[in-house]
Length: 271
Ligand SMILES: Nc1ncnc2c1ncn2[C@@H]1O[C@H](COP(=O)(O)OP(=O)(O)OP(=O)(O)O)[C@@H](O)[C@H]1O
Ligand SMILES: [Mg+2]
Image (cartoon, rainbow, N blue to C red; front, side, top):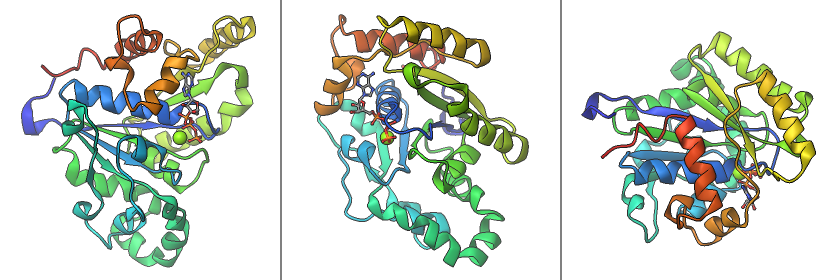
């Protein structure tokens, strides 16, 4: 529960180096739900596809995230207010992406000396930039691209928790291993407090093989309740209407309510 300005933001990254598993969906549903519950929420879109930015009503021609990270521009220059007809938008700010985020790697190499002076290592840059914002927000939600690059590493270093949407039909210990290895390295070196949860995503409950794989997954990892593959969810994105605003019968709303409850986000809801 918030105790005013003394509360530090909780930083949550949504990650999976595999593409199309429901990361951006998760980031959209979570960030809007937290904002709707009365939290001040900042979304940082670290994916150059910028899907989350545009679903939150923010389309910028050219993102300044690389310049913000290396310290050439201030937070005021990168922050936008989310836009849409729902009330929660008033609580939701966005650091938007655009395809120019692809310049990040190049800029990091060109600014190597400056980065070293400011942050020590480039992996710490995002954490350094988020530090002054920790009292301003209750939650910072970071969406990441489907690769184990600078963006994902920086996000893991800056986070308290990483949520990993995983598709049951694609599941193989091998597929998750690379991400889990990276998680362990970051936990041992830069960020000992980092926690993770695996979220079964786009699950087709009628397929027995998926059930079996989910059970296997739960034997090795912290697995949350699943999100099913539902028409509801696609509509939610195209209508820009989060699942919690759907009617009581919505299966998507049911799945997400169970998920948020299991992750403690419902108890933490503001009045
Ligand atoms: N539970 C769901 N049920 C049905 N469709 C879904 C569900 N979750 C996501 N989708 C749809 O699946 C597609 C991929 O989802 P999403 O963009 O969230 O994945 P992603 O992991 O962010 O992809 P990328 O790796 O490209 O960033 C989207 O069209 C999305 O609307
Ligand atoms: Mg995405």
